[in-house]
Image (cartoon, rainbow, N blue to C red; front, side, top):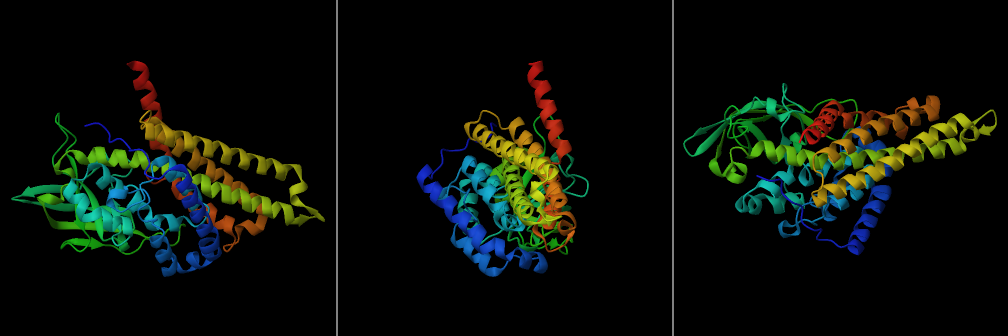
Length: 392
């Protein structure tokens, strides 16, 4: 089965420019001033949640026929760079609906499954959660141990998932499970739609993480969870691996764009600090070594932005949906780590204080190199693809 093709964007350039402008203003006027509140309470305020839903942010990447805005990936990354300018937990609130969870239904769901769930996902009435990672299987879905066994007209799911984004808030879990060992006919990995209130589903306590306060993750257990045959996404026992790889590849370009947004914020904070903080009666920005750090930050931001836009265009056109997403994620998530580190260095001791934006950014961006495929996995994908192409 070939990878699904993205349709032409449902929103033209002029209308998208207005959407982006509204999102830009929302981020800077409604969210940035409350970053400290989000960090201290470990939660997104209800009024920001409501405002995001009213703006259509829970479904901006869902097709219009299912209640979303229908943005393609080239438009998605432009919004992601806006979302990345503030606390990353804001984007997590609606990220799984638009991204790795919602895209499984968009690309692989049956018409009946789409009718049942997508409009509610797009409106934010349903929070969808992508349940792939396990204690022994993270970036490589082939290592799944969660099982799904056919029992009459039902499937019975058993297993444990870990670090599942939005699990404490989820209404629907997109669950990946093995139906049989991999063989010549397929991977044996399926994906199921499991409502959170289904008997046998248990959600663990909220994880305590290094950063990204307000973005909730937890373990999810499945103990004899029984779902009907209609819960099998696409009605295909082998769709799970393709669905995971397709959603993750698209998601990697999105994460790269988030990284660019965070890097831009770290750069802006650094320039503002360097222009006004003094040492020996002079702004520290007048010192050449500080200017060199700013130059390295600016170079990383500009290179990352260009790479993200190129990778998104190649994904939408179908030219490259394998190597380019991994290249973008690898470069941009490593880049933002360096930019954030330089931001703390430019701020000096002030940058180590808990309530200073660059301190939070430094902690928040560390996760970007880990989820949706670690940097090491991206290197393996890139290198493997290059060798396979050369061997043909």
